[in-house]
Length: 87
Image (spheres, one colour):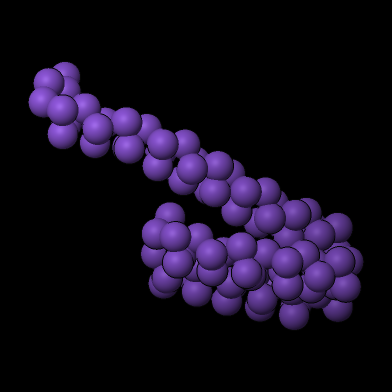
């Protein structure tokens, strides 16, 4: 339990950051789900559009420290190859 004023402040800051990061992760997952659904439907144009919308959101997650850059690079690469393979 936080006792000193500094540790109480850090606890408050951690709660706020947790809420912000949770919302950001949720937003990223929503964009990824839209891409996955477009791929599953087999619509190449919709999938490409969804991927274009998801990429900046994923990269924003990297700059804000929610995700690691290699994780995002891997996800984008794999999604991109799956979109390209749609005929």
